[in-house]
Length: 303
Picture 1 (cartoon, rainbow, N blue to C red):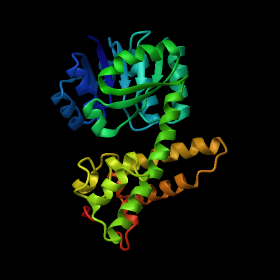
Picture 2 (cartoon, rainbow, N blue to C red):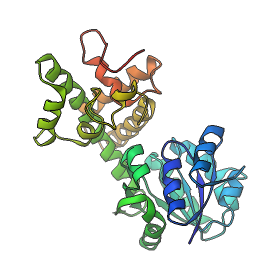
Picture 3 (cartoon, rainbow, N blue to C red):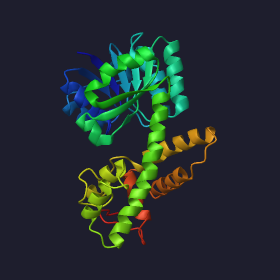
């Protein structure tokens, strides 16, 4: 059995670490949020009081944080990962970061004698709880191969994507596709209602037809249709709108640097930006459905 250091025990980190504990591993976790620490402790995590205590003596150190800037801060702090993990420790970042921050983690980790793998995930909170996440791994081949044994209890699929930053590149491309698809689901779901279709019947049709997609099957923005949808819970977040905005911005930066034209992604960014500017960044990203209706009201949402 292995000892894991884990930094970031939020909506994804808590269920992911719980699966490691269920598999018989020791997890020492840190998060500045007392509520997040309490939830992780209920899952069997040994909550510690500092970054240093999480990193010291661990076989592998995982980070699950909101942005690349947070990751770099946690790695570079005086009590952070680089200063306190044992030389040679495998470092894995599951955050949706930007490519330049991820590259910095690879380069600086190597310079300091560590192995680093960018290890973003797909599957959301439900996948984190079920242990069925897809991990996309980027790094040197030996480090990626070693990473798979630490990731196993949390994963449904582990896919080596290529060399350093390939994992985060794959995640950014995936999320661009996800959020563009989500806008189609929002618009199609409301048109179906306006045309008099029963939401459950239309959902069944779309699920086996060309309109099927991951957000359609998981986040369908009409209450009473899909158990996992935020629409059943006043659009409380399964994937926060402000984090969706952050992810699509990073993807657009990468697309711009590559000289690509991505008009659909720009529309998605503007919809998430509107939610954020209205003070709804903490709500679920599927609340963009409210921009489809005539008056901005939508079934399942109470302001």
